[in-house]
Image (cartoon, rainbow, N blue to C red; front, top):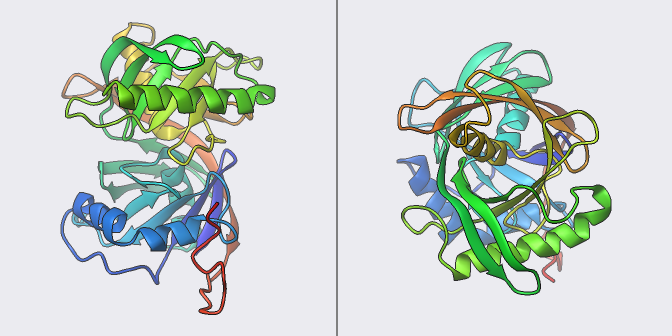
Amino acid sequence: MIDSHTGGEPTRVILDGAPDLGTGPLSERARRLATEHEGFYRSVMLEPRGQPAMVGALLVEPVDPTCVTGVIYFDVDAVLGMCGHGTIGLTVTLAHLGRIGVGVHRIETPAGVVTVELHDGNTVTVTSIESRRVQRDVSLDVPGYGAVTGDIAYGGNWFFIVDPSPIPVIPDNIGAMTELTIGIRNASIAARAGGERGEPVDHVILQGDSPNGAHSRNFVLCPDNNYDRSPCGTGSSARLACLAADGRLAAGEEIVQESVIGSSYRLSYRPGPNGGVIPRITGQAFVMSEAKLKFDSQDPFRAGIEI
């Protein structure tokens, strides 16, 4: 395995040793990972092997022969359709391994094929799947907080986006924002406010002002109840869809999206064929370590620490 971080958000690329997920569409193989091998992916993400906010990237054979690899992303609590920071980290990792060079490459995910451009050893632009806003100004009754209004959008995962945040998006408020966003996600699920086919919201974004001249700063809650240290690639994609739908950002116009810890992505979009947007996300990743995970049968925490 190889660990990297993108804007502070860790990615763990699994090169081998994973369960056999068979063949067929990546969406079906991702379903098998989620339903038949939960113990595997949780043991890789949970402490003491993993760390909070880490996302795993399992390399698999692509269906599309034009892709350099297939990948299935997951965190400790869910198998993901797509991961933006993970795709940046994966691209830098593939370059570190000598599997790709500077230039444009295709990667297959359960959500679809994405294109990556490796500019140098650390800088990557991801052209992601078509993203869209599904509902505007959805009001939720969040226990302890009252009415909270936001948009529901898809960027490879499902997001409830609150803009502006009722809490200042600053590091001192990470605990308070975590509690609020967990409440928002629970309320959205209870209200069945999600995708067109009933897909539940799995991420929540609070948008705020940046003190550093960026377009905005965000706080992103992930399925495992940890916050995204990066500005979140799929969240930024969903955010671009909302900005475009409101006429607040023109096609081709570039903005800087900042995370709550101050890391940033450069974002832009072009119109999508189905009325949404095709996001472009540029960020940097850095390889941190190479290792082999051991699962000793005598280890009482072989499956990870469950609390």
